[in-house]
Length: 288
Length: 288
Image (cartoon, rainbow over all chains, first blue to last red; front, side, top):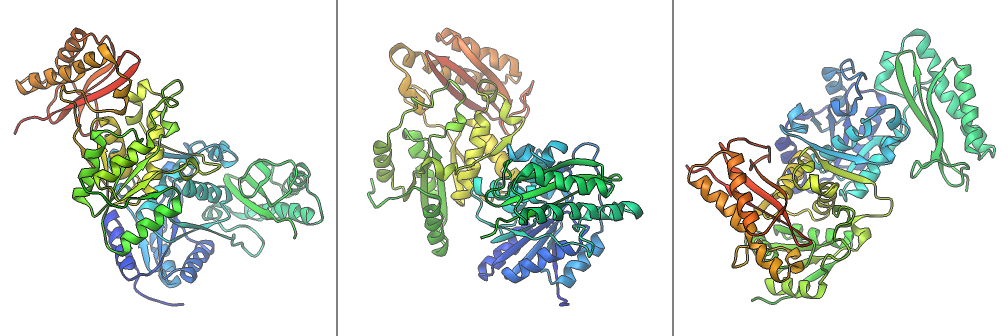
């Protein structure tokens, strides 16, 4: 592991200054926005950024606006010392660790929405969530004017929304989607996996098993969305996961509902295991 | 008058390329967004930009999203040849004349809102108007990454909303407000003045007279918003302007309602003269 100086930036002006220095030196900049509580999935985003750009900045900001009322904003894990050490060891060049007013200055009243994309799937279960995401990502991408920004495909709907937002608003940054990193037993890495204990942790492996079963059926020629969803649903229930918020086959590019997967599709799931809400997805890539 | 080559840019990539060339040459860029049908007020914005920056780009785009249903989008004046000639003579360096898909690419679904600012005053009379303005300005400012962007203070609420938007979203551009240019009889210049004929044109001078009367009262020591509004309202009615959408004294920095003008205020009016909706405003600057 490389070890080096990593600068910490906390306000808007220091981020601008860091960017100016890199622009002057004609270095490309990669950006990885996170909410902290970093795991191997985040570090994989950082390594992608390090490979594709000259300088990498990671932000850590637990964004209150993207938590719906009653969600886990207060108990969301905050581990600044561990996060900082992981980033330093990964070779990250700068940490943007803003205080609240660096993101939301006094009098803040701007909202960014991507609709209808933001009210589908997770947006139906988490009112206001994607408006909170779109707004904070617009702010972060404007502050950190990177050449590339890296997002995990585990949050597939978020990725599609951000790509749409950036295209619609004409922001000059490449949005790079990075494949999901999984535990050995297939569970998608997530900061919320920390909430899972004992039997719930074991049960959670059913999500990946269910999506994999749908993909195997797809690769064997099944193209009907309803049948693929039914296959996944059966495995979830067999695994003891009964609270299924959605299991849905969509067009991968737009997340529009499909009856038959003609071009590339994606199967997405959101479930509750114990008190913990978990999401995952798998691409259904048509051969040829 | 200077006469020179003025380049015309119609798509996103050509704007980006023009900006890159200016960045490389370390020239500062000024931006004047308009809806065309240019008049001396617009040309004053251009001259401010020419004075304060190295290169000036003007956009002309009649934005459908900022017209409420039943408003004058279809009949809004479109005079591309006259506009182009005025800009050329003014010394403008580039015209950004986008087609619809350069602003709204296929599948566009992003909305930018500044609330509650955008639902006050004109926002109350024109549902969706400021959402349309905020969205298109966000797009335009992202495409034309200028150092400074120039907006007329005639549209005072629009100016406050755009300044708020830019601060909130962390966009790296100075928003410059430019004082209103008026006809000899005081009428604020507006593309919609073309709609005024005969008696309506004469009657419209009552707006400036009414706001001026309120300012004179303010300068004579009157600080109560309600009394200042009553003075202006009386003059409007005496001038034969009976359809007053609002006449309101607000804090100039935030447009919050005030009962007493302690720091800087502004009096804003929206009226209908014949079929034509007209707005104007006047700053109430406390002495000392």
